[in-house]
Length: 244
Image 1 (spheres, one colour):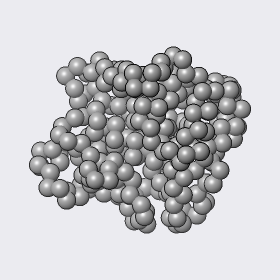
Image 2 (cartoon, helix red, strand yellow):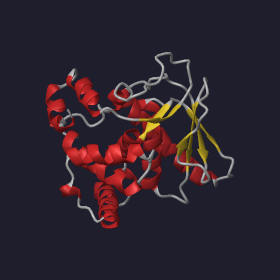
Image 3 (cartoon, one colour):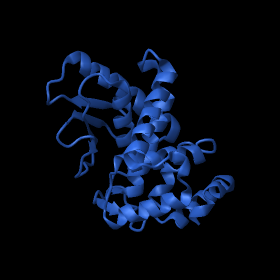
Image 4 (tube, helix red, strand yellow):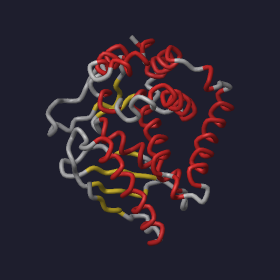
């Protein structure tokens, strides 16, 4: 997908070029891993927006996607994380959102950072690992919860609880669930779950790709999600057996 930077905040050209370079690599990575998003390949307008961003803007446009990010300076890990998270929404289906969608886009942001982040830090892959470990440690401390104490049943109960209050973003819980999902499924199919989410929610978007009506809050049906995964890979579905 081609893209442009809508530089309304008059970013320094060097920073704008740097952000653009990272965005180009991030979008290419999504294309390599997932091919086309469900609403098709469209140009992307990238905005620097610290009022609303990071965000995929609604209402959606027929001729393009619009993404806002907010990074105060040159922080490559944060830039990649935000871009990957918002691109994940486009590749799930930008007409919908929900607690599990947010968590999965958190996971995907960690995935992409792992895959392409090393060249952007002098510490290479170790620098990426340290960033992710730092996020994990902060989340564990703030929630008084260790990652190794989380299991699939806890994830299901936690997501359901957050859905009941329409809570889309709890950064620390999202981090911990995302990292636990990485432990469980990355060795089987790191990015594959993305394509199954929109078919596993209570109120999926229209099958008409020209219908841009949005569904701001969806709830995941874990049993249906596993059933959909099982059609593709039984071993992978068995790893999520507690959700059946």
